[in-house]
Image (cartoon, rainbow, N blue to C red):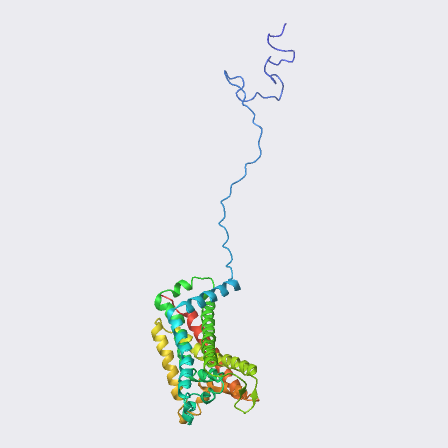
Length: 343
């Protein structure tokens, strides 16, 4: 018999692969009318998984550079010396030597002696007519007990309280310098004003003395005569000692300024304490307390006009001022760094 048409020799159906082969199975859908084999898609590379973006890490806080602290000090210095009140106070200090020099010149124009010959008046005033350089020492001795410390008390008392009263203190604290550096800048400004105020008195006295009286060799308190150049150097050293003598009242004023939001109250309190200390310093019954008052050794600068120089009271004065700076400066820092600034 002949094989059925459409079949091969091996019994496979023509056109159908694997038909009639034992173990072979037709693909799915094979033999169904109108069905076709599915397309085979080659697997592609895996798609990358998109991860949620992490928030950036906060940047480490930058420490303010020393240049920023210097800029803060320059800003405080410029603000202080641009005020009309500061310029007026310096003008008053500059006028004191002029008034003293004119008074001595008028009094001695008829041949009399300065001070009336009885020792009245500031120290060294009797020597002004012989040497105009002594007007520097006289003016510093006349302004140191009250005028100079009063001016320093005004500037120091207004340093922090004035900013708080004006509502500008909280804006200053936004600066990256922080409270400690701001307080240090204000105290450094007050210290600079101490030096400037003292030099204003000394320079005004030197110019007035050179115009009204002769200049020459200087006879010291101990009777030794030194050249004018050495006397001028001693006057510079005296001015520096006087400026250092005012650091105690400056630290006290800064501390009081941190206790209140009223600049007027801080200035009045500082000046009131100055007057109180001056009164206590002349009461004989308080001799045990007087060596600890910041004004007790103020006039020790006269020991620089001795040969040799007496250093005992000078060193006591500088040590006492350093103690006041350490105590009241620390108290001002503790108060200012923990204070709640609301204005």
